[in-house]
Image (cartoon, rainbow, N blue to C red):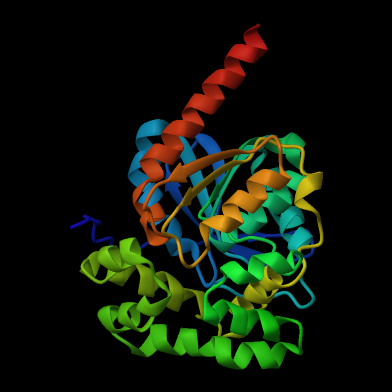
Length: 311
């Protein structure tokens, strides 16, 4: 039986940042204020609440984590016609607003997609980049379709059509998170889970509570924001992984069914400078239990960078 803390997700402060174009982003802050800045990118559907399990480890290891909600998710303002690379501009503006010349990034699930966008467009500003159980370019590489669950193949087909053809079925996820119990929501999705995730979420009320809460919060403004966020994942990304010149750290479980391990292998093969950390028999949701290991790895990376500067 796995253990997972019961987090109070109701009293986490929300902060807003006004972008140069006057649109606002919402975020929650975890870890040690004034520590090494890290931007955390949530999954899809996801929200700022997803970053809560990083808090204690980030405090002890000296990281200041900003879990930023993408447009239309949680409290962040919706943006029509938004693209993948627009997110990079938003993150850069947020960093500029805080005076961060360089910073780390980490993204879980669909957040890993946006990590790759940042390593493509602004590698010079990054201290490190972690793609954790991340999504792959299924809209660019047809061969990856064979590794998708039936529900993802369903959404992939609809992502190329009009938005409402995607939003309507996708909205059912938000309705389920809103009206079902924690356990009911977890059981409704268990057909998309591997053995490790089923053992973690079905047998652990705390994980079921956390998972439903972060998904429910994503749909706070309705389905338009989360659905558009998902459409961007299924459609062509707008850049090639082979054009990334950055040492991305890819952490992925072999029992992941939400984002198959084959996606990690593909990304690793496309980016020669990447490192693939293979987590044997780990599922997708178990990534939320290993942030201490990931942040400890980030500390090692920073230490190595400091040595290189001194040499």
